Length: 398
Ligand SMILES: *Cc1c(COP(=O)(O)O)cnc(C)c1O
Ligand code: SF4
Image 1 (spheres, rainbow, N blue to C red):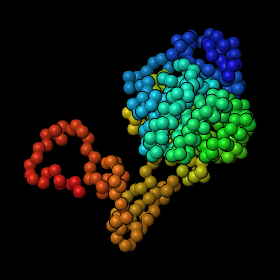
Image 2 (spheres, helix red, strand yellow; image 1 turned 90 degrees about the horizontal axis):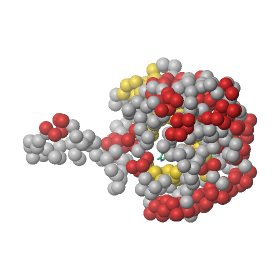
Image 3 (cartoon, rainbow, N blue to C red; image 1 turned 60 degrees about the horizontal axis):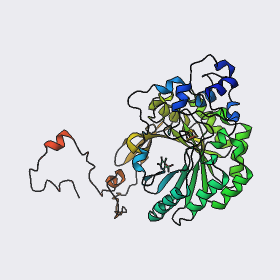
Image 4 (cartoon, rainbow, N blue to C red; image 1 turned 180 degrees about the vertical axis):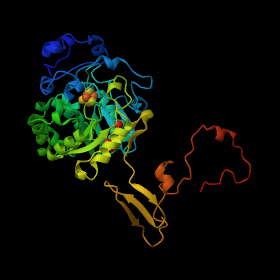
């Protein structure tokens, strides 16, 4: 951490070939740079043809944004009942435990936070979060994220984990960290010994390219797995870095070989400063089309678009249902073979769907027949509509 490359001058000293390049001072002032010596050593070439270089060396393009990019596209700040904690889904919450990372990814989705001030969660804030969790026992899965929580001292990480464990309704604690990829020597035996006291602990790490799977990073992941921590991986599709079916295939095969389950493949968020990394959504579809059938299901991640406006993660995949009748569903496989799946011969009336008392209208509730519609608030047609018969309000609502 102490030897991270932090200034354009240090960068030019490490990579003399960059000395004559564009001035990065204003980029680094807006979006901090930090590169661990270890991660810098993974570069094969000090130019933008190298995936490692692209992911950690700032570029002037970061300062040019189309208008639809946002500082906080997921609107996390609107879903923060306590500062530093995002509560978006019914049963899980995300804690921003620190703003610090060992290496600042140029494609970071929390560019507004990561590295702008390097601070970690205070005892007082943690107490507020724990109180919120106690008052909301439906939250059973807490994600410790940031920044990179494993850049904190082992004592500081333990302070967070032990306080979360005191909340009886918290079942799973997940840690989101890129440390195994960019600072693998941080995964010490001491850290692993501490983590195993707070099981079940799951870790999601962030490998994007096969070149990041080195003997050191693999050894770090093995230490975590051997401490009983199941490992998942979250990758981001990045233009010119990993946006090809063959690279993702190679990455996913290498991950499962090392006991790391590919979990999510993310479409790049609409974050300011990342336009040069974005790919069309169709590229992710192509990759999913390529993977299914060719690779073990264990090695296939879910491709998701984390939707703007706080819509959350939406899985996107090619369509495998070609057609349907009450008697048959027609499916296609990855080879293009069409198969008819006969439906049960006995009429299926769905009587087993029991309405939930606390449910709000959602797509599942529509399929269960609990609600008959979800209505956009303002449509021109809707504003023109007027009651015309006594039963107007009840038609369709049952
Ligand atoms: C991604 C995310 C989660 C976890 O989602 P999973 O699909 O369970 O991995 C939880 N909260 C927030 C705010 C998230 O962005
Ligand atoms: S490690 Fe995570 S939080 Fe830190 S810069 Fe990279 S993507 Fe952002």
